[in-house]
Length: 125
Image (cartoon, rainbow, N blue to C red; front, side, top):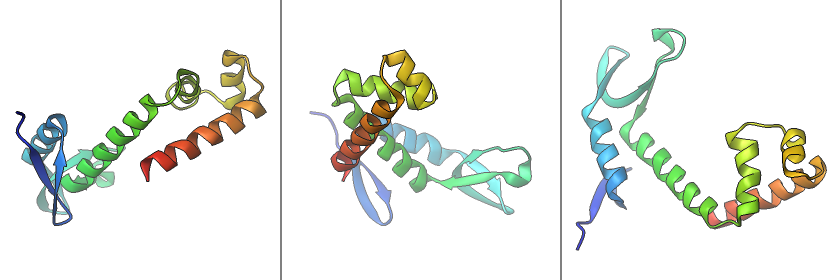
């Protein structure tokens, strides 16, 4: 039987899968310098060090948890709907170009995308 893993988020213990637990511990062990203080965090370097953004471990875990939940929901969609999301959000094509790739009118694609996003929102609430 697999060991249950919990991480603290906003004062509560949340059950997470092994991958997320391992990532949490990896991030927690890193430190970044921000505002003359060390904090367990992840850093995104932007154009200059002054624009450095440090995200708390809890924020990172919740973002990753949300992303994981979203990926699970997307995998439950029919392949045609997954393909629409792929061309628009992964390949970053406009609805017009994605519509051409999929052989659909851009207006039709737009309404299909809206229905898919609504379906995902319902799955995630």
